[in-house]
Amino acid sequence: MQDTEQTNEWVNWIEEAVDKDYFKFYEYNQFNNIQHIGTGGFGKVYRANWKKSEKQFALKSFFSLDNVTVKEIVRELKIQREVDFHDNIIRCYGITKLETGIIDRRYL
Ligand SMILES: Nc1ncnc2c1ncn2[C@@H]1O[C@H](COP(=O)(O)OP(=O)(O)OP(=O)(O)O)[C@@H](O)[C@H]1O
Image 1 (spheres, protein in one colour):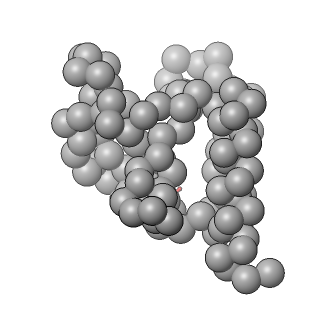
Image 2 (cartoon, protein in one colour):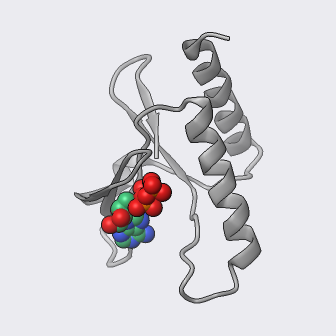
């Protein structure tokens, strides 16, 4: 399967999961004070405030939504589900989408 087809398939999967409320969806424009804090193997990480509150989120972006990246996301979410009782384990609050053009969408 071609890369674009694969990406579209994952994007559909994400959008269906959001529709079914498997993930909470956050509007990207409700984040502010977005600052780059780190870079990992799969993408950049930003710190952001939500809705002008004091609450800070880490926004993880992905260089590309290819098979390897999506498998890593699923792997991290599964591990998190196993150990989410520990205070030192951060949890995944949900997903947001950055639209930079009609067809250019990025999920964070
Ligand atoms: N929840 C967070 N709070 C604060 N900083 C974070 C958070 N998540 C990531 N970071 C910062 O962003 C960097 C990259 O994080 P990321 O999770 O993408 O990659 P990694 O776990 O360091 O490496 P890899 O991508 O190889 O798994 C981290 O090293 C850290 O500095």
